[in-house]
Length: 490
Image (cartoon, rainbow, N blue to C red):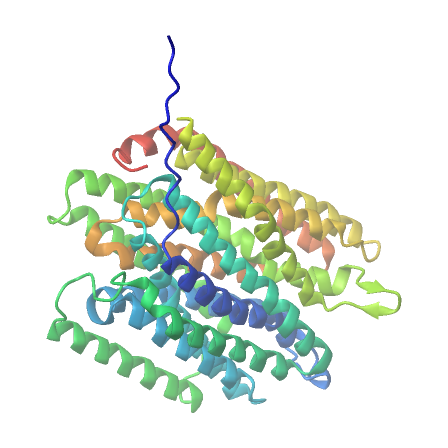
């Protein structure tokens, strides 16, 4: 005689309540960041008579690359501040306040305010960006596919903000006044700060205290010394005592960033405080660093060369009304919000069935899809030599790049928090964003070489595509070894 069991399958555990706090904080911060970024190159290259700065494409590309690189480069000391001094929660709030100050400074129509505003936003983002991601990781101490899904949801918050920002700031900047667009970005960050303060209690102890233990006097002294150096250097630049060539500085900065990464990884590999298992996991992070840098050197063409392609070579009129070129920046976040739940569901479903895709394969897929997008826009640039082209070329490029991003970026964020030695989590998140810094810097340099016409753009897009294909194939070959080095980490 058979019997029917009354046993029920337990429901899947819910995500922590603190995830909503971080979701909305990051949403408003990204609204301000991407809203301003959508205007940056267009503002710099616009004629002085149109309220712009009248910079050449080469100069604008170099400044864009330096600024976006600085945003992510500042993530390394930002992680250190959280680990050693303030804790992640306080560092996130301080970073948001500095970002808001930067955007409002950009709203002042003076060249000195322009450069000072960029500096404030870069430093503030360096404090906020790695640490808010580190707090997400702390909410999921068990790791696994649920943590990956949590990071993907968090990534949706990034892209909701990235959609709102260009919509609001882009229209104000291009159709009303450039500086009104920058001010709107500041308002967005203020809203994010207010929300973080109101919902901070949901985070509990996650990121409340420094991970490095008790704050040491030596660390305080180092922080104050670094701050004094930054203030002094800024004063010398603002007063004209020291002058810099942005193009030459950008060329040199890429080697400096590589040197910083090399020194940091060597320090960990030679450290006596890390076990052999931890060092192998750091080796995986080193591979992710190289892959991420190349990925972002292509992906971040969105705010530079692809933005200029939208403005100069893409038909944007509908019934006599011309859409702002910056609105094309909304395509990527729109696709992410649409597709992120699908991709997150695929990762969780495969993991439940014991068929989880290895980390190296996910990164390889991201690079190969990035290459496919650049092959599409390369064909569009070739056609643009004969006149403006329809928006479908940009639409297809952003669609492919979005799927590439979902294969690589949220998974990379989650993997770094899992692979990093416990007392280096904040700094490892800084290293992840250091890779983005290098990629953004190279992206600006590439964009600066695209200004002679659509033929130059097509040539540069082809080089990016071939580079991504080559590294993607290498990652496929290394996927098995990476999985071995990640033993014990899912």
